Length: 305
Image (cartoon, rainbow, N blue to C red; front, side, top):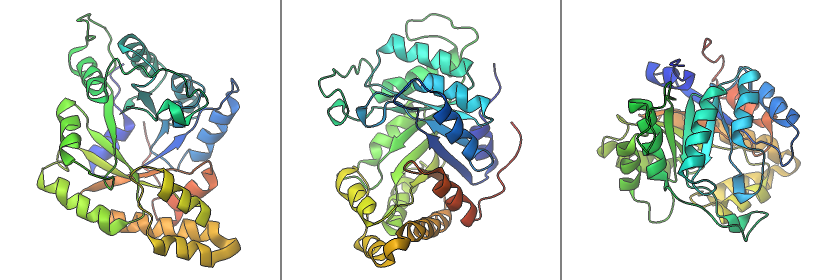
């Protein structure tokens, strides 16, 4: 039960880490998770199992963790405060650990208004800071928020998300997440590396690179329409005009241009002192994820559990 997170071990070693993600289906069919997972074996050090993304109903990420682990990958359990009270969050932390998750990403969750049940009531019994503290208390003290001993208790490597290029960004919030017990952070998708570098200088001045392993989010755009959608609808995603122009000029080869663009972003991010790895989001295309990881020279990945 005390086996540490493989992702944690890789990051602690100073190796540039690679994470990806799988999306549980909007059905009870397990094969899509298994297929996604098998496609990423050997390419990612760990994969996030998403939790009702965009506020729409999907298979529970706890079940997804079991399928990812069975496929030979380390799952990162995503949990949102939107859908569960403290009982449900604690139960899913226990279940996720039992089924192979050794890392957890604590999230607020996308608004339900975006999904297929816009009338659904969000829970938010705990906010994301309190969820981080819950996972940290389980890890360090082996007890629930109600003071009950949970032996054996899960000892998660705890992560959070961040929007470095979001409007009115306040680095103090990331610092508070670190204070609550977070040890790694996965950022929103980055296309403007220069702006991300400026953010890096801001958090470096606060000593956050020493406290948090930073994995920068990247995603290969399928074409100019994909890039515009992310620019216009995804909070914190800055897509420079030059990126849209490049994809427009590529015409039928836009997907290839998007991969090449993302490979260049990954390489430039790797040159920023303190960036510990990348979180590669495929936007539903595992082939593109593999290409980005391979073409960026990030293979082979470290072996061992």
